[in-house]
Each structure stands twice: as structure tokens, then as C-alpha cells.
Length: 426
Ligand code: UD1
Image (tube, rainbow, N blue to C red; front, side):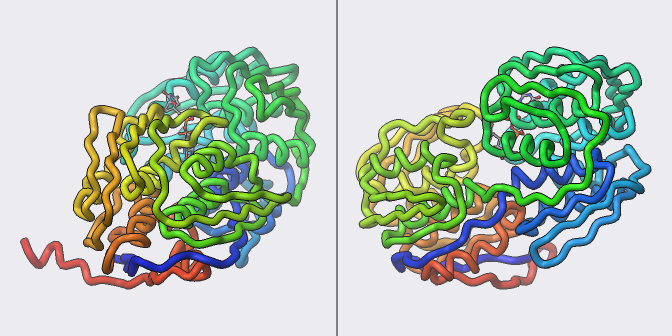
């Protein structure tokens, strides 16, 4: 059982290159199954979710090699179209395999991904979109069984701009004769990155980044070397770390436009932020003005994946903030733990009212999800004394050794392995 121990009170300073985007790498890896040749992904970051996706590809028969920062996939020998529950339980993004497997084999069987710690996360929009492309879908014994032998290009109108559904439908239609159009598509930067990967491999996709995506079917995708974009949520997390702890840091390699919603909020709170090319420089005096209203929205609105971290900032800001989580219904679990640290938060359904307090106090806290875990680490940076954040494996899903990054930025944080006493006490 690994934990992070954070000693609060240090201001942050220093420079850091932002790592590759997990949410860009996952669909790109899934899409590699469609490539008739070799895929080399440069400057990757080996988050545990990414490693799980690589395992899935291996299980489907692909040859995979991971070095320190490169992933190589040869899907020519893939011969399996089933993704079992052992993977869908570990990463929900395994649902991204539906589209690529349909493109490659005209069939796909994927175990149903359950609910998760941030909400129910249905996949009805993925399935409705695939049905519009004439995929026959049966849901039985916990599996989604797709038969795509009569698949046809078509027009898909998403009832909600879901990121995963947009990506799945894009990947399912890559090799269909004719033109597929996705209306009300999600506009997240990772979707544009998937489009760029596909086009670099010879696909014909346009419009990603807008709400209408056009996929013109091609005969095949060919070998490709690609570098995914850097992670806007990691960049945002460290900007918020600096806002909370105070100090001045510079982040390199990420694209500032991807974080405009956050930058605007942080300026409003009193941070100084400048951007140039791929550089973001932020400075904070520590005790900031509260942000009266924050509401999560699909891109380019304020990202749900930074909601917990900005909530932590509000716990120590001057005034009262109302945070409305519109995307995931149980994404305030962090609040129970923050209350142990002295935060003043009340929750009513999907709204949190956060009254800024003078101080947080170090405590033993447990994370139940990825971004909540990052939020607790940020709380530890400003709390008096030591904070121990347990169950770090949640954080490792999307931050590659968060403690190393934060140490580069002057934080006092270390990872420790702790004995699990839970059974001894029964
Ligand atoms: C992706 C991101 C995740 C981020 C989220 C929203 C990846 C690997 N994950 O998740 O980090 O928090 O976008 O920016 O890229 N919905 C349905 N039916 C569906 C699909 C979604 O009702 O079939 C709902 C969801 O419950 C949620 C909303 O749509 O309320 C947004 O979900 P979606 O955009 O699909 O998120 P993910 O792709 O799961």
C-alpha cells in the first residue's frame, strides 16, 4: 500500500516539462489496432492506465514494446476481438476498443464497464451512435457484443457531446466506404489529437475541435510515428498547486489555449499568469480571492477533471464559492477528506458551497479516485503539518510519480510503502 506524505508550508518555484496527455494516448493506443503496419508513439508517459491499454493490445495479439518514453505497436498479428472484464474493471477507457475492433474485424466484444467512483458513466451514446452506423448490438452476460458486418457510413447526432462516444464513433467509421458525419461532437483537444494521429496514418478526418466531425472512409491506415499532445489536466493541476501554495513556476510544452478556462479563473482569483508559445508562467501570493461561481462544462468550459483541485483552492481562499459539477454525479467525494483537514464545505446534490478557512491542518486522508487524489495532495501542500494521502494507485492512473514533479517545484513530498493492517484488526 503506497502513500504520499506531504509536509505543508513551502512555496513552489521552478520549471517543469508537462508530460504526455493520458486522455490523448488512450484512444490513440486503441486506434493502433486499425493500423495496417507499425505505430511508434514518441515522448509517451507510462501512466498505469496507459500500461493497461498496452496490455489490452498485447492480449488482442498485437506486438507491443515499451521503452522509457516510447511505445511501439505492431497490430498486424492481432487476432482477437474480445476485451474481457479483467481490463474493463481496471480502466473504463477499454470501452474505446469497440470502435477500432469494429474497424479492424467488423466485430467486437467488450465486457461492460461498471459504474465508477465519480459517477454512473453510462455508454448509451456510444452504442446509439454505433447502431446508427448499422452495427447490430447485443448486451448479454455482461458483454457488449457488436456485429458490424453490415456497417455503413452515416450521420450520427449525439444527444450530448460525449468525449468517449465521439472518439469511438470516429474510430468505428475510419474504413467505411463513404462519409460519416458526427454532429454535436465533443470538442476536447484530445479529439483533435486523435484526428491528427489518424490523418498521419493516412486517414481522412476533419472538423475535430469543432462540433461537426467528418470522416471520409479510406481503405487502410499505414505505419505512423506520432507524438501526442501534453496533458492539460496535469498542467492545470500544477498551476493550481502554485496558486494554493504560493510561489512562481513555469510549465513548458503544454498548449496554453487548452487551459484558457482555468487561466481566466486563476487571474480572477489574483494570480499573475503569462503565456508565450508553449510556456505558462504563473505566480501567486498564496491567499487568493474566492471564485464566487465555478461550473464544470465540456471543453472549452471549465474541465470537470480540474474541479476537485480548484475546490481545494477555494477551501483556503477569502470568501465563499459555489461549485456546480454538471458532468459526474459523485465527484465531491474528496470533501469528506478535506473536512478532516479543517475545510468548511457543504454539499447539496451536485453543488458544493465552500467557505474559505484560514488554515487547513495535515491529516491522514484516503483518495478514492484519480483527480480527487491530486486535490488531496494539493491540500497537503498548504496544510499545517504532515498530510498522508493513502491509496496512491488512483493518482498513478494519470500522474507519473506526482511526487517527483512536485519535488522539482520545491514541494516537500515523498512516497512511502505502508503495511496494510486492515485484516489484522478484524
Ligand atoms: C472523458 C475523459 C475524462 C473526462 C470526461 C469529461 C478520457 C479517457 N476520459 O471521459 O477524464 O472527465 O471526458 O471531460 O478521455 N454520458 C452519457 N452516455 C454516454 C457517454 C457519456 O450519458 O454514452 C455522459 C456521462 O455520464 C457524463 C457526460 O456524458 O455525464 C460526459 O461524459 P464523456 O464526455 O463521455 O466522458 P468520458 O469520455 O467518459
